[in-house]
Amino acid sequence: MRCRGLDWFSFFLADIQTGFGPFVAIYLTAHAWTQSEIGLVLTVGGLVALVGQMPGGLAVDMIRARRLLAGLAVIAICLSSLVLAIWPIYPIVLAGRVLHAAASCIVGPALAAISLDVVGHAALGERIGRNARFASIGNGVAALAMGACGHLFSDRAIFVLAALLVLPALLALRGVRPQAAGPTVRREARPRGEALAISALLRDSRLLIFGLCVLLFHLANAAMLPLVAGAAAIEESRWATALVAACMVVPQGVVALICPQVGRWAQSWGRRPLLLCCFAALTLRGILFALTADPYAVVAIQALDGICAAVGGVVFTLVVADIARASGRFNFALGLTGSAVGIGASLSTCLGGYLFDRCGGHVAFLGLAGIAAIGLAVVLCLVPETRPDRATLPA
Image 1 (cartoon, helix red, strand yellow):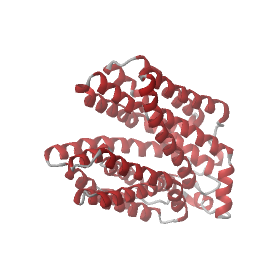
Image 2 (cartoon, rainbow, N blue to C red):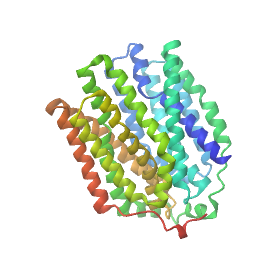
Image 3 (cartoon, rainbow, N blue to C red):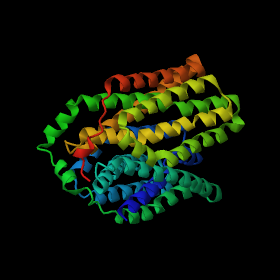
């Protein structure tokens, strides 16, 4: 029952968050917002999310009532969705986006912490994989439902639906009982001193090198799909929207299909082989995008994005859990790598766009593939295997 609750909480949380994707720009444009105003609001939200990663993770580490914390964060997301629907004016929308970004910095680490509390470290890989599977399914279902709401009713209905989905999310969270982790995890969650634990983490070369890998991964990855969309709009604008939609659906299907298996592989094979596969797939994806613009080939190539997303979503979290296990500051470490995600993704779109405009699509994709290859080399040469000895893990 506890695990079913986590399944459905992951599903409905993804449903709620889907409304804050491309739908926001469409909705605000329909209310006569300029692109610069929309861009500023989205940028402010992104900056708040970036700055809030480590404080959010630290808050989850320090507050033991994690279900309550997650529930409050979900309610805050509900409020930000409602203010978007009711008052689409600049100061209110800006405040709503800030609230949403701050709540998202809490709810992600809280879900990871609750998962660890429920299943323990030994089964965390498969549990994270199930979370990712249900989140992927939730994203797909929500995108269809919200698209239908926007078409049949209005763009405002999308955000009303997102707010209503908070109710089943809270019901699912209520069914979670974090008690299977046992005394070992609870003991690890009490380090000798807050400053000492954080200082030890920040000096841990494994975490710093892995943070560099995460930054390189997102620096190479984040711009690829936007560049595909831009190239498609230039080549054949009539099919650009359909092509981008297909490119979004295919990876979600791959993630839903293989994520739990990735968690099992991470426990049996170790983390490092899967990290190598992830960076190799990203490198190959960039090279293939540079070689072809055929729409069918592009959609097929996006299956590699599903592999990267499945491995990254599971193994990145597991590596952080392995490194931070003794410190009891798992979620602070997650926040640190989350900051690397934000920095890498932000720089990626700027770099990719610059290369595309100045040198063309082939050079842009090859440049991103080169960054992924550097990440592959860093994993191969510098990242150690972090999987704990099974004999040291609690049942």
